[in-house]
Amino acid sequence: MLQAENGIDNQGNPTGGYVTALGLEISWQDAPLGRGPDRKEPNGCFVEMVIEAAMTRLKFYQESKFVCKETAQALAHLSEALNCLDRRTQKREAQGVEGTLGL
Image (cartoon, rainbow, N blue to C red):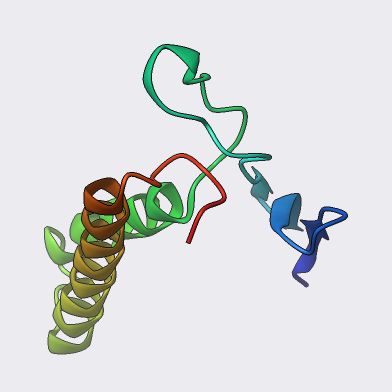
């Protein structure tokens, strides 16, 4: 059974939180990292890390006797999810708001 809690600050912005399940414990990044010399080290997990972890496991299956079309499709979709999130980051970087709460 999956348990999750997502935080919201006083301005309604997403903050940290967690997800737990059997064999799984994720603490999400809490607060923006900032920009330039004021940039902070991450204090939690990003969605991209979770997707990459899932892809690592699925690739392991694809290199075993359990290789199948459906796992290949799942990998393709997860790869596209990472691409979408990367495009979002690039867009935010071009706008000068990556690492901040700016839109």
